[in-house]
Amino acid sequence: MAEFKYEITERIGVLSQNPNGWERQLNMVSWNDREPKYDIRDWSPDGTKMGKGISLTHDEIEILKDILNGSDDDGPEAEA
Image 1 (cartoon, rainbow, N blue to C red):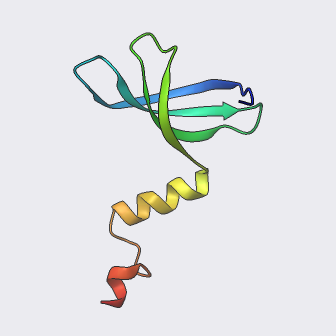
Image 2 (image 1 turned 120 degrees about the vertical axis):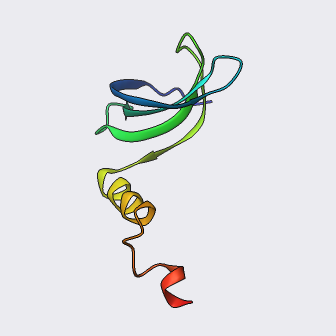
């Protein structure tokens, strides 16, 4: 498996925590020395292990915010 490196450049917040102590976090993460992206994933209590997650660019997070706020009038619900 190819190695990768990451750096959490900003810890934004904890979305939830499961009984084992793992936290679903929103952070800014730089993957392989690239521009940091918003990243949502589960982290072990000591921060040494991570689960699967998703990374979003600034533009993607703005679109997601609009969708969640209900201001996306071009989405599938607008066609119904």
